[in-house]
Image (tube, rainbow, N blue to C red; front, side, top):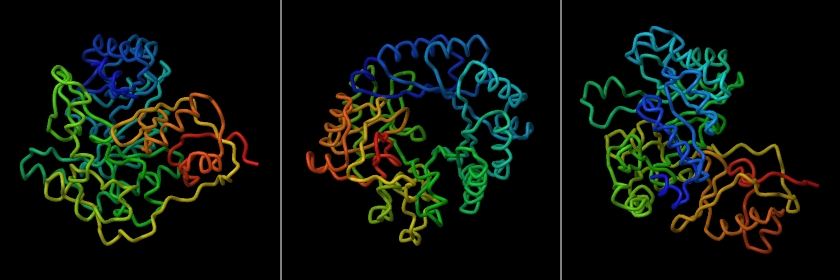
Length: 384
């Protein structure tokens, strides 16, 4: 499996489960194999099984960050939602062990009607533990659930607005906020409220896949469809079976003509009103498609002669008709193949360039926000 990831130039792997520490030996083996192939990795874990010894080994093997699940500041609610007595205390213990080992810990809170009002206080509680990156993610009902469970787990627009409002409060307090499930742009009333969430778009079958322990490959972690097995086929072949996630055929009709689609992506395909992959996100609002939610302007202004350098950590890959530039972890930028070649050449040479030189030499014209804000490809050498 690791050989296949290397062959097709996969940049980053998230080790997840189930619970990875239930099979720590295999997890550490995977870390070793990924490191040999210069593939970076992070870990999703509930950290309840973490010990100082395991944390030290993981850190030694190159693990830098852990995303854990935290369901409420209230112990009773956390234990209820995790269906495990004592899980609150064990999670707190695991967080402290991970931090003591030098691991960066972020937390995700899956939000349902049970803990909807707990988002703000949970983020503040985690901040007191030293966690400054906090995601509050709306629950996505299982695709095969019955009507009663679907009704119980489906959040309405006002519920989602409450999540966003509480997250924006935390942002004002200095917390880095996120949602692990994307929001459609037309849900928001302003560019300021959308700004913290706009980098989270659907990556299923576009820049990411899900690999099961048995080698089966899916496009989306929330969707059951399997596209092949790494035990029988090449990853590239399986990837080619996922064209439906990339060719626009699964987009909701209201998104296809929307001017915001390129930045938005249409929300979550698993959160549709009618349960189909092609349905519009339950919180999409087509009436807002014409509001101004453009990206806030950059405090940094570039000129045509600004000296720039491509960041050393950038990694490059060609995927069919597009190029992918990875700027670290899960941060990927999609560019034309010709643009990829130019930036890779500049990167490999370690040379500097200017927006003017890109335009005159390579006929590449990019808005300034693409260099720094959105794509994070470059840093400034001189801005005289």
